[in-house]
Image (cartoon, rainbow, N blue to C red; front, side, top):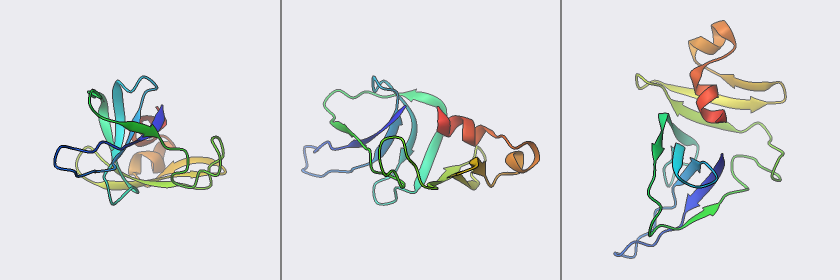
Length: 117
Protein backbone atom coordinates (compact mmCIF):
# COMPACT_ATOMS: atom_id res chain seq x y z
CA UNK A 1 0.00 0.00 0.00
CA UNK A 2 1.19 3.49 -0.81
CA UNK A 3 -0.05 7.04 -0.24
CA UNK A 4 -0.99 9.04 -3.35
CA UNK A 5 -2.04 12.66 -3.61
CA UNK A 6 -4.62 13.46 -6.25
CA UNK A 7 -3.44 16.21 -8.57
CA UNK A 8 -6.38 16.23 -10.98
CA UNK A 9 -7.40 19.60 -12.40
CA UNK A 10 -11.13 19.40 -12.99
CA UNK A 11 -13.00 21.07 -15.88
CA UNK A 12 -13.90 24.06 -13.68
CA UNK A 13 -10.17 24.60 -12.96
CA UNK A 14 -10.36 23.47 -9.34
CA UNK A 15 -7.98 21.03 -7.67
CA UNK A 16 -8.67 19.06 -4.51
CA UNK A 17 -5.40 17.44 -3.40
CA UNK A 18 -6.90 14.62 -1.33
CA UNK A 19 -4.58 11.85 -0.17
CA UNK A 20 -5.55 8.23 -0.80
CA UNK A 21 -3.91 5.06 0.48
CA UNK A 22 -4.16 2.61 -2.41
CA UNK A 23 -2.67 -0.61 -3.64
CA UNK A 24 0.31 -0.21 -5.98
CA UNK A 25 -1.92 -0.64 -9.06
CA UNK A 26 -4.17 2.19 -7.80
CA UNK A 27 -7.25 -0.03 -8.18
CA UNK A 28 -8.38 -0.12 -4.54
CA UNK A 29 -8.42 2.61 -1.90
CA UNK A 30 -8.06 1.67 1.77
CA UNK A 31 -8.14 5.11 3.37
CA UNK A 32 -8.58 8.77 2.49
CA UNK A 33 -7.51 12.12 3.92
CA UNK A 34 -9.57 15.12 2.90
CA UNK A 35 -7.95 18.15 1.31
CA UNK A 36 -7.16 20.77 3.94
CA UNK A 37 -7.02 18.29 6.81
CA UNK A 38 -4.46 15.55 6.08
CA UNK A 39 -4.43 14.33 9.68
CA UNK A 40 -8.14 13.40 9.52
CA UNK A 41 -7.91 9.99 7.88
CA UNK A 42 -11.05 8.02 7.03
CA UNK A 43 -10.30 4.29 6.88
CA UNK A 44 -12.75 2.32 4.75
CA UNK A 45 -14.20 -0.79 6.41
CA UNK A 46 -13.63 -2.60 3.09
CA UNK A 47 -11.30 -1.45 0.31
CA UNK A 48 -13.21 0.45 -2.35
CA UNK A 49 -12.76 0.22 -6.10
CA UNK A 50 -11.51 3.51 -7.47
CA UNK A 51 -11.65 4.65 -11.07
CA UNK A 52 -8.45 6.52 -11.87
CA UNK A 53 -9.24 7.20 -15.53
CA UNK A 54 -8.86 10.91 -16.21
CA UNK A 55 -7.41 11.52 -12.75
CA UNK A 56 -3.78 12.16 -11.85
CA UNK A 57 -2.17 10.70 -8.72
CA UNK A 58 1.38 11.19 -7.50
CA UNK A 59 3.12 9.14 -4.79
CA UNK A 60 3.50 10.92 -1.47
CA UNK A 61 6.75 10.24 0.37
CA UNK A 62 6.97 13.05 2.88
CA UNK A 63 3.70 12.86 4.80
CA UNK A 64 2.98 12.41 8.52
CA UNK A 65 6.62 12.58 9.60
CA UNK A 66 8.32 10.47 6.92
CA UNK A 67 11.99 11.44 6.82
CA UNK A 68 12.71 8.96 4.07
CA UNK A 69 10.85 6.07 2.48
CA UNK A 70 11.16 3.71 5.45
CA UNK A 71 11.65 5.91 8.50
CA UNK A 72 8.65 7.26 10.41
CA UNK A 73 8.72 9.46 13.50
CA UNK A 74 5.55 8.97 15.59
CA UNK A 75 2.94 9.88 12.99
CA UNK A 76 -0.65 10.09 14.21
CA UNK A 77 -3.86 9.50 12.28
CA UNK A 78 -7.43 10.27 13.26
CA UNK A 79 -9.52 7.26 12.28
CA UNK A 80 -13.31 7.19 12.07
CA UNK A 81 -14.81 4.18 13.82
CA UNK A 82 -17.75 2.21 12.42
CA UNK A 83 -20.20 4.04 14.72
CA UNK A 84 -18.81 7.52 14.04
CA UNK A 85 -16.37 7.74 16.96
CA UNK A 86 -12.92 9.15 16.25
CA UNK A 87 -9.79 7.37 17.44
CA UNK A 88 -6.13 8.31 17.30
CA UNK A 89 -3.74 5.76 15.82
CA UNK A 90 -0.06 6.41 16.42
CA UNK A 91 3.13 4.69 15.33
CA UNK A 92 5.63 4.76 18.18
CA UNK A 93 9.06 3.21 18.63
CA UNK A 94 7.25 0.32 20.41
CA UNK A 95 4.73 -0.27 17.61
CA UNK A 96 1.27 0.94 16.68
CA UNK A 97 -1.26 2.11 19.28
CA UNK A 98 -4.92 3.14 19.13
CA UNK A 99 -7.13 4.99 21.60
CA UNK A 100 -10.13 2.64 21.08
CA UNK A 101 -11.30 0.27 23.82
CA UNK A 102 -10.49 -2.78 21.70
CA UNK A 103 -6.82 -1.85 21.70
CA UNK A 104 -6.84 -1.11 25.45
CA UNK A 105 -8.17 -4.59 26.22
CA UNK A 106 -6.52 -6.71 23.50
CA UNK A 107 -3.54 -4.63 22.28
CA UNK A 108 -5.02 -5.05 18.79
CA UNK A 109 -7.95 -3.53 16.91
CA UNK A 110 -9.48 -3.28 13.46
CA UNK A 111 -8.27 0.33 13.08
CA UNK A 112 -4.63 -0.83 13.18
CA UNK A 113 -5.31 -3.68 10.79
CA UNK A 114 -7.07 -1.40 8.28
CA UNK A 115 -4.41 1.29 8.45
CA UNK A 116 -1.54 -1.16 8.03
CA UNK A 117 -2.91 -2.87 4.89
